[in-house]
Length: 199
Image: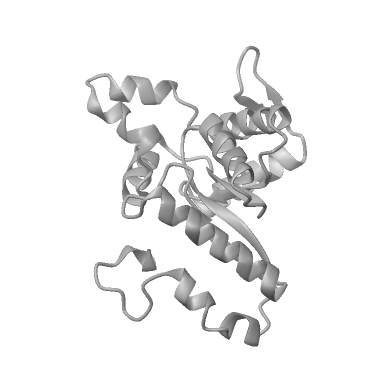
């Protein structure tokens, strides 16, 4: 919380910021708050759920349109299950699920470790075949997106409304990939969720 600093400068959590009344005073119409499908290395699940309830109440009280933007990860099925669990707990804020854009594997691992993406990466790093296993994981944006879409179709209670892309491989590379997908310039590879991009 509070940017994960050991000694927060002024606020110890986002809740203190929204409780100042400043956000509604300055007329912000939209607000994204953090979501952690794989948990938070410094904050337990009970505290995270309390924070989301607090933020949802803030949205209802002020009329500010609040959505959840999640950390990225490598477990799309887990993302869908997490979003469905939020609905079961009464959290109805729309979810923008975090997906890493096209990124070289080594760089993706580096960002995953820096961002505390623990569950889907850390368990693999405990054994000698970690890199082999990671290479088989759904690390590409195409595989993540296809699996999340399929999961949401099967789990309507998961309020995932759109992806939120992290341009770890570069803004231009991510924007180019997104434009090709939006234009339909790809085909699904046989027996795979990978996209074959059209030239």
